[in-house]
Image (cartoon, rainbow, N blue to C red; front, side):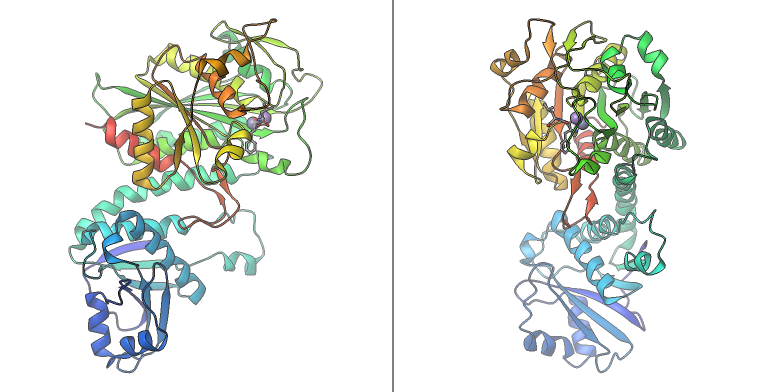
Length: 497
Ligand code: BES
Ligand code: MN
Ligand code: ZN
């Protein structure tokens, strides 16, 4: 979809979108249109008892006086609640109703009803951002023309806003962030017969054109470095495991370094501890953590953030073949700590253990944040709404949660505790890779903490949120690109000069 900004001007024909507050107050462009159509808007509003609830729409075709226009009135709810997050949702709602009306293009008047707290430029850019995020659909493998056509919404939106240059400038940044979100969504959506670790590494290499330094380690190099925990997960697959290191040096030489680390299991069968068949296809999105990291790197580099950010993703396929690791195997991780593999389906933590150790050894980052579709247990705890956040540093957790609030991504702080740490002790090695039945997401986090070396660290379990089975206000069903926006915001709030 092509999005543009212009000074407010009523077009001669086509679809026009105007906003209305929850108290029935029209925006100023709405009032002008009402006059030009001899009160058609107010009459329709009365007839339909349309009050302008959030996301509610009312369409008027060819009103008298402006017969070549179709007017879509969109409710924004209470004007005083119209902040940027709500403006994004309004933009997405406009996109959706234009889609169902079959409108190919529209002029959208980004003029808030009286009493809104958002400034005009913010409102317009946020509406455009919301529409853009809602525009995503994964149709790469749809060949039937009618099915493909059904997925296509409006192809052009023009936002009418006073001081359009400011809105255009703001949107340019947001557009880069949306590109990052969409990149993550594309990666997560890709089927695993295509999405091998090497394919993922090739996708990461695309970031080079944004100025990101991209390095790829193959299995031989990882073995040499002692990453036996990660390599063991991939040894039952014919696909070679990979690790990708992405560096964006937009900040000063002495500025702090943020590192983002992602679980990139391109398919998780469970390995020899094989998963049941029902729903196993969901495991195409077991590289969601890597998707977040790659998408965030894209956003941060594309908007040329003045910050130093490193992304590291561990890419493996967890398959059961004659060479696969077995329950009871003991592996020595890069840290030197030994791990008894009780369950080969608890593979993500084995991948992250080496990726995290490598990251802090090589780069001495000031902060380390990992992302992983790590446990089913986090879904039991927090459902499909919240991601679970663990941290060895409460201030860091607070900053991440605050960034999430700013962008509308829900993150819940979960507890770490020595009592849980003990539960992964085993007599046969330094630790085992699973704890007892209860608190499975916590023991997974405790496992990771043993590889942090006291570097300020946070772990986000995104198993419940990386994919959505229902439509969300800003997203169609499917891959969500969760935490790309939060990480961009986190860097912006705390690490940008
Ligand atoms: N990738 C899964 C976790 C998962 C489950 C992600 C559902 C998304 C949706 C992970 O590798 C896994 O299998 N975890 C096990 C751990 C258990 C064996 C301790 C789980 O959660 O059942
Ligand atoms: Mn697993
Ligand atoms: Zn997994």
